[in-house]
Amino acid sequence: MSDQNERNDANGRNAAHGDPEGVPGNRLRKELPAEVPVPAPGTGPRAEERPAQPLTGRQRLVKGLWPPRFTRAQLIVALLLFGLGFGLAVQVASNSDTDSALRGARQEDLVRILDELDSRTQRLEDEKQGLERQRQELQSSSDQAAEARRQTAEKARQLGILAGTVAAQGPGITMTIEDTKGTVKADMLLDAIQELRAAGAEAIQVNGVRVVADTYFADSDRSVSVDGNKINAPYRFRVIGKPQDLEPALNIPGGVVQTLKKEQATVTVERPDKIVVDALRRAERPDYARSSSQ
Image (cartoon, rainbow, N blue to C red; front, side, top):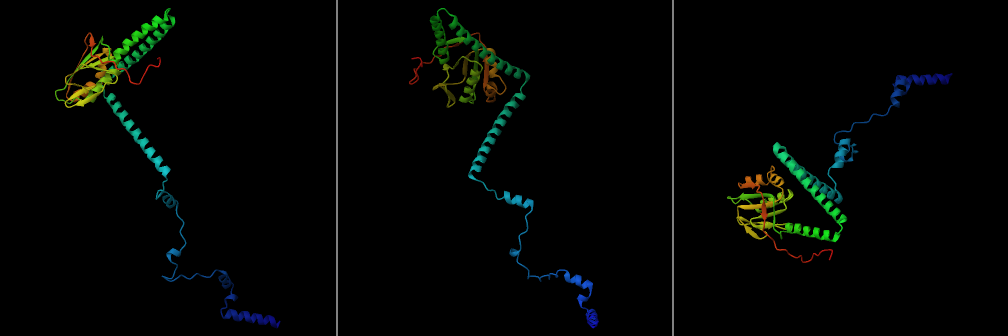
């Protein structure tokens, strides 16, 4: 009994002197973590000693893209793709120019272009049928050797016309180019030759010079040289072929006649009853090529 009284007196004295263990609220405060003192200015850790802050998604993306890191293979692929894209852009621009020229053409010009395409298709079809007839004649002829010789002679005459070693006559057109300003160049005459060939010209003569497959044009002072032969304006073309195909080919929008007129040249196209191409070229034996049948 005396021990119990002593403990009660001790508890009373602790409570009287403010002992925190004697109050339940003070025991709860004792169980909380100790307060962290605020460091004085200038006494905290340095910036380089502080832990790094985590990066945001945008910062990680920027850090991964810049600065760029390229390998040699990637640079080569990039250059190839650039070249391909540039080529496609040039092709699209060229096609756009052609489409624009046709889009701005008159209705009669478009009809003429379609007629020219139909005529080319018909010529190819006629040539195909002719070859088929020759094959059938060779197969059905009683004297195949004689028929073969006849066809060979006919083929030799045709090749002579194309090679310029044989004179030719037939329907066609004449084209005269007056160039008083001296603005007509060799490439313009060559464009005319190419357009006539595409329209089905079979024999062409320019100012007394026969035009064949290997004919070349070159500028020579204020005139033009054809296969080394100097010719002067006016330039006179004699062309054998179907007039209904040849003349429209020269007059298409943006074609030969329109280009020459922009250079202040005068172009006259006529359709005589008969065209004679009598300028000849000397037959030359090739130095190396031989017939495979020999």
